[in-house]
Image 1 (tube, rainbow, N blue to C red):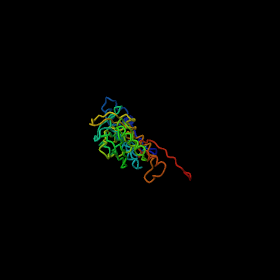
Image 2 (image 1 turned 135 degrees about the horizontal axis):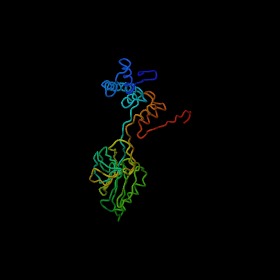
Image 3 (image 1 turned 90 degrees about the horizontal axis):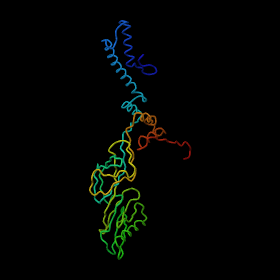
Image 4 (image 1 turned 60 degrees about the vertical axis):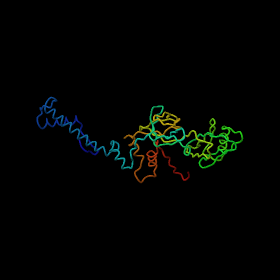
Length: 316
């Protein structure tokens, strides 16, 4: 019998509805009444049964909307929201892309690049290759003179080399390199590249390089900007896999991702959301183990599961 019972909602399906209608007609109208498919009454019974079946299914859907284990889509979202849980949205893979090129080169926002697996990424902000905000800058000697000070400021710290009689461009860049590398600073290092000096950051943070003389000039600059995948979801981009520039940029020499990108995710499925809801306590219980685990999963990029070990001892 269809209806609400102590164990939940029970509904009749189409075959049961049709059978019940035909049995009622034989009981209340005529035991020999014709209900075959090619008879008018048989077709009418099927029409009514189909409509009643749709109504029963709607009742079941409304009833299930209050059950976390059965609710789907927006109804499940609404139940989760009552426990202060939100479905995790789809995200894009992202990471830092290094661009190298001539000083003054500008990489516009939305510049497209392509990985070796043919996935596409775009720059999330414009980037200008300038020595005053860079990961590295390569300098050359513009003019060789005896007894001349060749110097740079790196993060407002001065480094200078005074040329000796007969010094070549190679001697000057070697001397300035030694000055930088023997200093007590730790934020940059220098190396000799041909007849140029390459000054680069040591901690992936941008450095500011300012020339204190016209006898040196920048010939190449490297800087980084955040890329995002054009498509949402778990798009994998290993280190040094995003190399091709789809959008032409004048002055660019090369582009690459030194590290693997943070992998995005697809929108959380109903099954994933159901599994996560018990891990997140309702509002007000933010210090419990389940709530901490749930917060880590919800708020930390790339985390799909977490386990908190609670220290109940009196010492760390």
